[in-house]
Image (cartoon, rainbow, N blue to C red; front, side, top):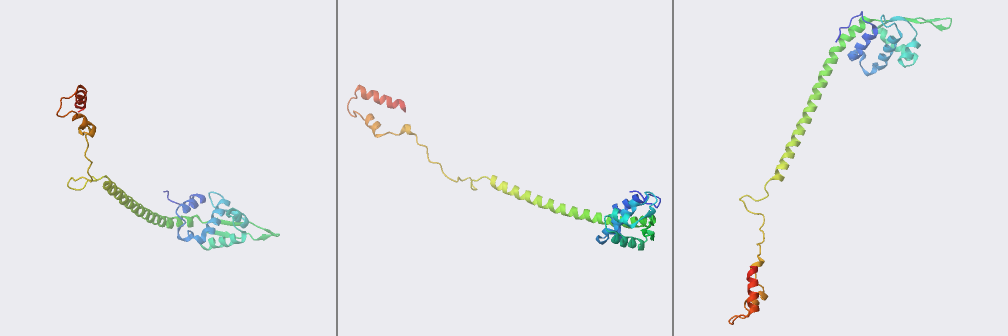
Length: 210
């Protein structure tokens, strides 16, 4: 950050003042138009010296305000010691240019006053931002812990403690060992009597299935 001096061009000093936040003198909302008139005046005057002949209508056009209202802002800047103003008056019904000088020493003083105020405001803003981000981080961590707890609950073993089972499976039935009435009849065919050849063949076939 460069050190402002009265030897610097007026526009550079005005830029430094704007970057410093204008201070408590010109930095309020009610002085928005005053700042615009000062900037318009600086644009109409020589770049380095910041002094010369200019009409109020020229300044008003550069600032974007009406001529009457611009005149009141120039009067305010004069009362603050920011400009020196020698009215031109009227000659043969035509307005004569005024001689106006922007007091660069006053701009330098305003810059020195404004910079500490801006630094303090920036520090407060950074602290507020850190506090806000810290709150967001805390909330995010809390949500992460909640999600992990829910996931752990869903992933837990569903069996009850003690190794018991939540249900029993039906016993498997081996149909190969079950005798139907037909097979019983075939197996008992000719019981107590010598089996015929067909009966013996059927019995051997059933035994082979087992």
